[in-house]
Length: 585
Image 1 (spheres, one colour):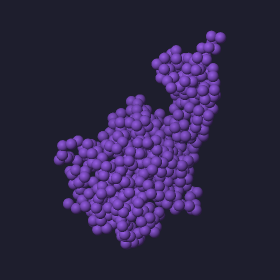
Image 2 (spheres, rainbow, N blue to C red):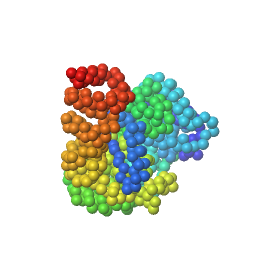
Image 3 (cartoon, rainbow, N blue to C red):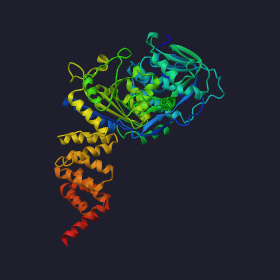
C-alpha cells in the first residue's frame, strides 16, 4: 500500500532521526535551531451568561496562564534539506520507510501514532520518551549532516500539504514554505502534494501563490499523493522533532518553559509536546509575513476600513453562524466598524486590511489566519466558546506571536439546544457561538474602552473587570481613564482597589498606588497579601511611618507570614526595633 504508513512499529523503526538517517542531509547548517522571542499579549476572558460556564472558563484560563504559557515564544528555524528516495504519503513524508517529524505535520504524526494499537507491552509515553532520550544522547553536537556537493539547480522542491481547502492549514503550513525555494537557489518544479480529492482544490491557494510568489506561479504543480521522488528538497523544522536534538540543546528550553509537572524537561511526554506546539512558531511564517508586507508597499488600500467585523460569504466558506451577530454588528457600526468578508477580498487586500487594522472582530474561524499580517498596534478580537478555548485557542497563538499584535478572546456560549452541555468534538464538530446580552455588553465595553471611550458603570465589579482586561493587553492608559471616571467607587471594594493600585504602579505613581492599597486594606484587613504590598510600596517611596506600621500589623496579625517575610531581610527587624524604640521614647 503505497499511500499507507505502518503505525504499529516501534518509534526507532517509524521515525526518522535527522542526525543519523541515510538519505537526509541539510543544504547548509542553519544559523539557529531555535531561539526565544517576545511573547505578545494573548488573553482570554469568560463571557457566558451562565455562571457554571464562566467558572469552568475562568479556571481553564488561569490554569493555562500559570501552567501552559512559556515566558518567551520559541521560534524554530525552517531550512531546506535534501531527501533521497522520498515518498510523500497522504500528508506525511518518508525516507527509507521512516517518517519525517517536521513542524505541524510532525505533531500530527505523533498524535496519530499515539492513537494506534501497539504490539508491544510498554506504555506508549514511556516508549516515546525512551526513544527521544536515546536520540538526544546519540546527537553529540548540534550540527546536522550536510550534503557534500552542490545539487542540480533543477532539483524539485516539494511540500506536503495537510489539504488544499482549509485556509488556515494551507497558509500556515504550506504556503509559508515557498519562502525557502529562492533560499535554496532552485529553478526546478515546485510540488505541493496533498491527500484530498481534486474537486476539493480551492482557488484561494493558487491566488495567494500568484500574489505572493509570482516568480514561482508557473512552476508550481499541485499533485495528489502518493508521490515518489528519487531526489527532492523539502523544508524541515525542528518544532515537533525538538527532542531529537542534543541533550544540552534540549535542556536550554527549561529557561523558558513553565516550572510545572506538565513540562518534563528532556522527556518528550504528550503534555510537553503539546506545550511546545502552542508556544512555538515556524520561521517560515516570519518570512511569509515579511514577504506579504513587501507585496503591499506603495499600493493604495485607502478603500479598506481600519475597524471591521469579519463575517462569512456563504458561497465560498462553511457557514457557522453566530447567534447575536446582528445585534453586535449594529452596535459596532456606531463606532465606525464595517462588515467585511475576507472571501470577497483579493489576497493583497486581505493582507493590507490586517496590516492597517486598528481592530478586527469576528467569531472563531479560519479568518484569524490573517492575524499573521496584522500590525503590532492592532487588536484582534475573537468570540468563541468553552469548546474553542479548550481545543482551538492555542492554534492561533503562533500567528499572534509572529505579528506581535494583541490577540483577545471572549469565550461566550454555545448556539445549541442545551447551552450548558459540553459538545463532543468528534461527534458535534465545532459548535457555533451564541453571544448573549451579557456577553454583548462585555465585548462592547472592552471595544469602546480600547478605543478611548469610557463606559459608565454602576457596579465596582464591572469597573474592575474592564480595567483589568485593558491592563492585560497593555492598554494601561485606557484603564486609567476608566478608573478616573469612576473615582471613589473603589472605596470598600478590595478587587477594584487592587486593580487601581496595579494601574498606578504601572505609571510609577507610587503615592497614588499606596493610597489605593490602603483602600484595599480598609476593605479587607484580613489580607496579609495586601499588607505585604503596602510594605513594598512604602519602602519604594521611603514612607517610613507607613512601612513600620504595616510591618507591625503583619507581625501582630500574621506571625507565621511575618516570619517568612522577615527571613533573609535584616531591614525588617531593624525597622521593627526602631519603631518600638520610637514608641518607648
